[in-house]
Length: 113
Length: 110
Image (cartoon, rainbow over all chains, first blue to last red; front, side, top):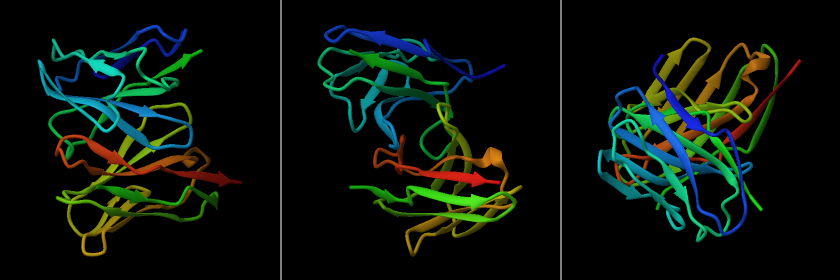
């Protein structure tokens, strides 16, 4: 079955540590996205990538980094520079750009203490 | 900049009809999307309107008025499983990602 996987579902880290969230898709989609969701809030765009080896900052990129070495994979690193990293992180993909339906992974809930 | 406004909460009775409104401000508008998200789950795509008018998909319909910068999602024959958050979204200025509203939490009661 095609889809997007994110791992792990729950992640706990100590303040000051970098952590990498995994996102893999087998839908053969060119575009991939990372969003952050806080309680009672909408989704805010962190980074997006239209094609392998290329990515752009979204609205809240500070304290995050990404790579896109393979079409299927778009890992997100939450660095120690991110002031408030505790959140629900969602990865998505689409065939092209924003006009197309975005398919979301199940999310990773990160808690930093 | 871009902004989307939608009510934060709506409550309706099982079997009823509910309308969730969305007004937006954006440059370079391409279309309005709607997503559903159950608590703790992944958002799933419901509909996309690029042109004015009503699009119907089963119990769900979505409407767009480009001149009024306004759209709505209409849910008919409400079921308990429709209790979820509903987000409207427009394409970001980049042309590739989406900007989402803060979401409307729909509670369906017996």
